[in-house]
Length: 613
Image (cartoon, rainbow, N blue to C red; front, side):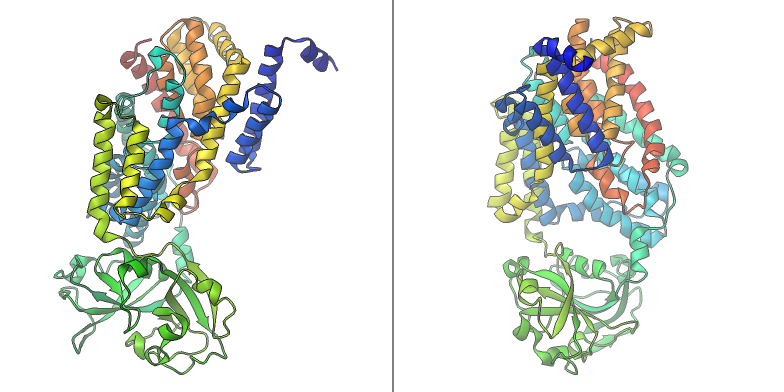
């Protein structure tokens, strides 16, 4: 009752500030316990604050008109185009080179991952690198748990070096541009490199020197699943454009592919089996492998190295782009039983091509087209996009899984995609001289990706991660509420009082260190983008209270919010490696907290010297 009377008698600004802080605290609790998706949680809070008129409807949806949010959407399309054209895979294939030890692999990862993540979406970079990393780990019997956290950390640190390296930098840049303060003009393309590059150097040294002691050594999740993985018989043809043609088997790396065994090579009418390591691959060779699904579908991503679906497979590249993979088990009443695949005319009957065949624990031999099917055989099928829906109740076979990501890559557009990324970087660096904003540059290059068919319009739309954009847009509204209600002033006053309490009142450097620490704590509990939007108004208000330059405080927020090391929920790349690495939450705390402390000291020593207070 006393609390209600106090609120009723308080001036409007006071109750609005306390109500906003209560809402923010509740949102933190919900996010921390994972009771609902972050975008829904933050939008729920934003709508509530709009209903009680703490912020206006225009302020609530201001994030949707932010150039930073729009630019993030365009970068999703550009990153997807690089993935669709195989550009990321080509780069990832050269990532580990001849590294044979854990430290050697880490040394190879540092320059490649950080360089890519400085200009590309970190999620796409980690997704690409994980494939190469897991293959390397299986080959060299190293647990991926020793390298997956470093992969995520390196992508984060690389993204801290440029304006477009991470969406968190773009969020802070948008907040700075919308502040109306001349000293908070937009960030330059490489302005953050003054703190980002030293962060990268210190962080890389930390991982290289202490990674072995801090990171767990757990059995690979994929390896656990692979112990019972289905072994298929598959044939592939070496085409004229294949980069493996003219290379020895061992040089091409075919004997080291995980989960794959080269059975024989058919050259004209001659069968070469067993296959010697120094055998030279020739155009027109048909190679027969025994392997798991994950490795087989990767053949689609090697230019000129094509699975032989069946003898009548003459589909164009455009037609193959529409295809999917799925697994089907021959039923006990199927008319296919007893027929070989060639004679069954599978493509004509079902509009699907048999790529590979699995039969229990039996290792199949010979040509795929000559295999006589039995009840229980599992077929890996290359199908049209509507095959699963059309054959869901087909009595001839049972559909057991769909492999949606296994699609032919637009290798003929790889060079174009890489060239367009180079154009984007040039426009971002020099666009200011001709009056071109970064968001227009990103949309222009994204449009060129579609026009040059590096990615289809449909795939471009599907590549935009609406959950991320909604989360960022909602965080903008909450930031407006913190600032407009006076809640940011309350917190800033509290921080000022804390500096007085510890005997450094009025010390701007101490306030800067406190802002960095608060940002790290928030960033451990919620996403980095939400942290940036929520802490930014508090930091700028603290600078105003001290009468100092607010720009170093904005840089401090950008640096601390982007450094998401101590929690898997704070950043997408941490979540991506969380399951495959078999990690526990405590693994991120053990590896991340010492790194945070090192970077905290570095930031407080460096930021005031580059951006004077």
